[in-house]
Image (cartoon, rainbow, N blue to C red; front, side, top):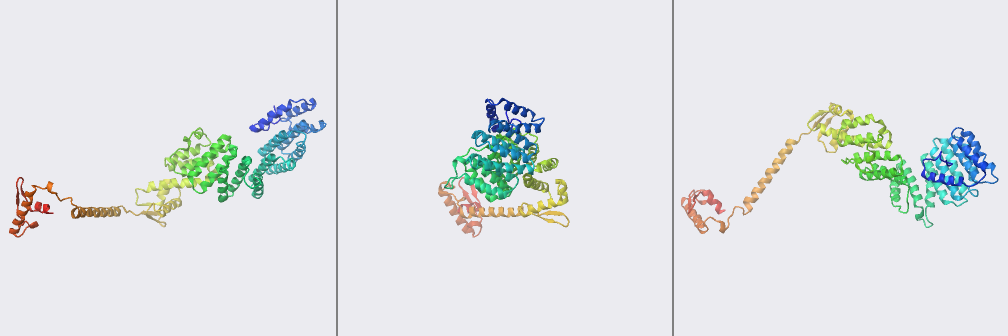
Length: 505
């Protein structure tokens, strides 16, 4: 087993370091020191205090500073930090840093220092541990300042910035971030493409800070700048953080579509990185689906489908089903039985909008057949308070989705029944339109006039009309000047005065 297996089993980068140390272990050296080292490693689990003494005794066995003394101090520092002996850990870490200039190679020392700093970052759980971390970082920066190791300087300062962020010491964080940005720029002030990966990590820290402080203006500017960085190959977790904060920013602006896109990208990156934050972001994705009033199930995509039956996400899955089926009672029941859903402040803040939307739909559906009802009746049916019902009805009236009046004293609502008035108004408009059409057809069009080719009998018809006219003149009265006389058609008999009048027109 390698030096750090007991401490750093969950980090791929650190596992590579272990293999490197295994190679180092194969080098010939003093057998007594080597045996002492491995004996101490065997005692770590059962007798950590004795193991620490053995590890600390190794530097004295070397004539000059070398690999075994460095390894012994490294193991001792990790054990002391794990046992909460923070002052001793800082003391021996300071001693260990004296080895990095000459006793061990630059690459090996850099890897080892990074591993130690990663170990204490993951193991810190209280203020004392955080204070110890701060001392570790300051000692590291002071030690490597003279070696011109810019890469380690950047990594260590980024870890320190994460510590300030976690402790919400934003004043310290702003100063450090400003210094880090300068370190990632060229002399002319433009971004250095060779440090794009570090720049994205710095942006991620700054974006988280502005997301926590709800400074959306600065957050939006940094978010857009981060997405424009093309010279980096960032860790998926960094992009997951940036996209998650972007989604929250869009949510605050009620830009549900953009929020959904960002949360999906964040989930995909967290999933690729193996981060547990993917579950929380998946809940945010489900939340935005409901806020968009979308009928598309968010678990139908290839990336999210494996999590559909995950017990950690089952409550949100049930909420989506109830929302899309417009089942207010089931929706309320799920929220009541899964209080942990609201444990996340972001979900608790935004789920109210979903709940209100569903309750509003429920109120409209319930009151559709009524022209008069009580607030208590609606409250009982939807299992919510009378105050909430009154608030929803008031919103609907102000939004002109409902025409009615609330009687707060009696707790009743009267809906203005305008259906008869609307029907009468429609009939009047219809009658007016028909009348206008008739006048146009009869007074102005040629729809009832016939041409010569289609007239009845051609010239004979003209003679008929003339005869009829003379006959009418002899009679001295009758409609259309025919005086009630009748003209005989050569083939079809007689035309009455009404038919002759139509021909004249």
